[in-house]
Image (cartoon, rainbow, N blue to C red):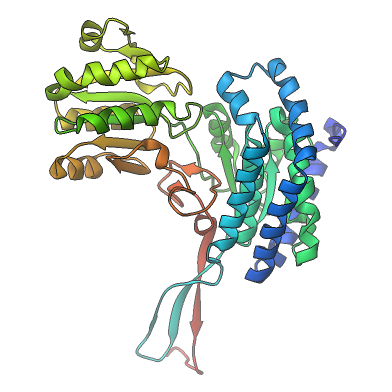
Length: 427
């Protein structure tokens, strides 16, 4: 499978505008599409991806071959790589989305006024989504599926690192769309790796209703700076685990190791560990030893370095760093309030966890920590659309408006008021 030839610079703006115009036209047709048609496309796409695994893996091999030239980290290469098991997981996500209730047309709330008017708030699609993401081929399919299920058209702008993989995936799923009454332009992959294309799309609010960037901080900051339409941001995942004075010893070790080590190159992996001073004598050694045995570098404050010989001193920058690899920052805090203050100051408002048997401490932590998800006695790795029962997600928003946390099909809708009367007029 070959990718498209480069688009000349003098034709790039025209290409972007025509792509956005086609997406806008498709989005209007999508708003009235039957649930059965969307689900049938999702199910057939799932089967087609598995059946055409060889095509997908051949394309992915081209991306993996080129990865060293892009200077990808081991974590980034892991996110880029596909195998038959990961393709099957992509297909499973499509089936899960098909099984979800269709949010379009759902009545959120309603009431009848004294004059007999029935007032309802009804979910409707956002319209056209411009989704910008980096080297994760599975996200290509997740985003397309979520957008179609929620009645939106989507323009996909994947990273150059995964361009062959993304093209193969979109070829497969988009070719099936017309069979189910879905406009062929409802899922479009941007056919250029020129960064200037992103800037052109971000200046087209007349065609694009929302931009969703998913990737590194520099990408997201650029989109926020240049976008002329609303942005749903997926910022860094500097996630914390806090071991309270009343933490269960076994849970403290198991949750910390899972949160950090189960998969390091993802946004909901733990990057910072806080330990209450009253628990440090019993928890610090077993927890840090378990991390050390997993090959994790410990960057600690002065107290941690004194107590654990393998630790190295942490810098101020370490407290706010998303490592996405085998490093963790560790700090001993005097109180629960200090833990909350540290997380709100240095964290990224993504996912933070407390391990405790004290219900009052858990409640105070949940009230005080300003993050999209707060976990009590559970790993940060559970902040995920699939784990929350939302199906696949288009990202985990660290915003407060319009969506927060995992963004599934409901988060890609807005609402309109539908008012039904029987000849009423206002006096």
